[in-house]
Length: 157
Image (cartoon, rainbow, N blue to C red; front, side, top):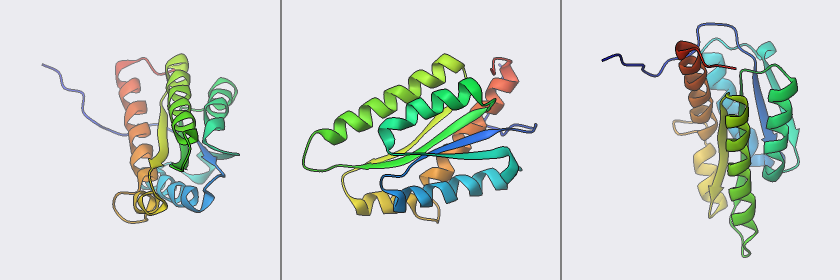
């Protein structure tokens, strides 16, 4: 039985980070984690584009445009949606997730869901901390793994 394990691509990449300005104090930490993952695996700053959008709800459209017109190998979507006292959280988080999944499937390229969906600011800060467990780092690694898998099985873009 052949096993295809997690790996990182062995070729030059173009990666887009798309980040929500809403809750930017958290998103900035996720971006730092994403950049750490990329740098650790040989993706240089000139191979990375950072695109800002107003909030998490706008992330899918930005990811769509970046993949359709930007020549990127993958997109890492970053943001934070924190539960409040209304159902707004459920709509934003759910539609953002579904929209990013749709973009990924449409283009056959990874679109990582690096949008924290937490009950409190403290939970979001914990998941964005610059030590082990930064979700920006984690989802960027997942993006690199999925690009490598697609390269290996010959289905990437």
